[in-house]
Length: 455
Ligand SMILES: Cc1cc2nc3c(=O)[nH]c(=O)nc-3n(C[C@H](O)[C@H](O)[C@H](O)COP(=O)(O)OP(=O)(O)OC[C@H]3O[C@@H](n4cnc5c(N)ncnc54)[C@H](O)[C@@H]3O)c2cc1C
Ligand SMILES: NC(=O)c1ccc[n+]([C@@H]2O[C@H](COP(=O)([O-])OP(=O)(O)OC[C@H]3O[C@@H](n4cnc5c(N)ncnc54)[C@H](O)[C@@H]3O)[C@@H](O)[C@H]2O)c1
Image (cartoon, rainbow, N blue to C red; front, side, top):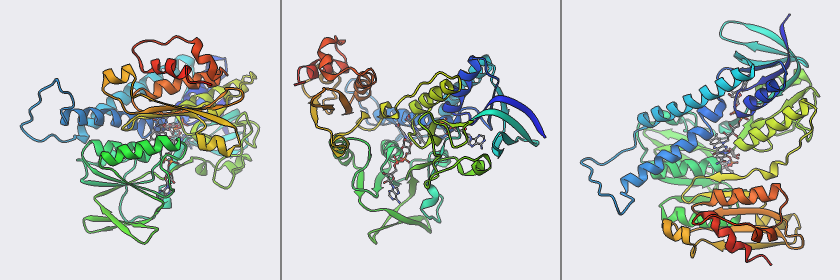
């Protein structure tokens, strides 16, 4: 028997589920949110953990290398990275974020059940909490169950590291092999290098960071090489074995490598498998992604999907954008936002950011595009900050001057890309750049120089 019925039931309390639940409750709907914890993998194993590790490893490296010429530092013992202290610091930040989420949900009047849900039928969930299992009915449901890593694709007799178990480490490993040169792989390679590990990235394709412009990636690879990180491309990891104290990584070219630890980051897939979606008439495609309409409705018209588990994009900005789209659709206020507008940022050495198409992708799509590549070399803010390396590349339609993409590497890359992201979304063409005034001295001041290059 159904215990209670709600207008809307949202499954999963990461940023996508929380945003959607809040918006709907703020607009008068009776909303139930179900998850074991508030905050999602976002808080406990995703963006928050990864960006905080990058931040503190940056501070660690700078202090160990006595990075400033203006500070005298003397150590009586050689410094080491302390995982326990790092975890304590990160837990502090996470608790604050979770508390803010909880307060916001309470203020909006969203009801919460701490548990997990699976579909019982097309309008009902079976919910299991600490004590019992019961049925909850819904008029509309939103799946916001996030994603998990594809670890099972690489057989291993050794427990591999990933973003969920990183704090089981007690000290920086001497050597780490990072399997997969995507977003997570390059970020954790940066983290391990900064805390003193010898790092090798193994990437099965011929290019790391598949969606980032080729020239930006080349610059990144050159920099990583200088930093002592080896990147092996065009070979995949087939299996991993623990032999005594060693870990052996077997590669597709019949060679093997050895390291103390292995970090696995070979992609993520939507958390749909354990929801019994069949019972609700929700169809998945071959890769396990839900079949969706452009307003993110599933094959069950009363059930929507938001965030990572759409399989369309796996970024925090997409979690919020997709939640906004779905909440508006449920409120009968159509709002379709293109996922192509999501800017991306990677806090690597150096920083990388991008929005829209790369030059290769634009050409693949048969677009007659032009490219402006502008280096930071003679740029005042870069000279003042001592960060002369880096460039920005703008890809635009030759006939309309419509901006197709912007990819940048170096300090300030994210802020520069944000400007172009706003121009793309507002459909402002590149030749309008000369009408804007920029602050001085800032990294975005470089845009004034770029304006002069538009032909
Ligand atoms: C290591 C790492 C670093 C990242 N760094 C960045 C970054 O720098 N920038 C960026 O934009 N993105 C980053 N991401 C991606 C970002 O974290 C995700 O895009 C974001 O968390 C997705 O939010 P979500 O709400 O869709 O899912 P999640 O945050 O994963 O939340 C999903 C929730 O659903 C719950 N759930 C699952 N199944 C059920 C069920 N049956 N019943 C009830 N609840 C359920 C889970 O417990 C979880 O709490 C990173 C991801 C990883 C793994
Ligand atoms: N800064 C950010 O915005 C950020 C940071 C981290 C994660 N994320 C999100 O999380 C998603 C998942 O990240 P990810 O790095 O796991 O996936 P990814 O798709 O970005 O990269 C996975 C890489 O692993 C490679 N690979 C797959 N199997 C392999 C094998 N057997 N051997 C060697 N290489 C192999 C793939 O070719 C690919 O390059 C990203 O796509 C992104 O959306 C975003």
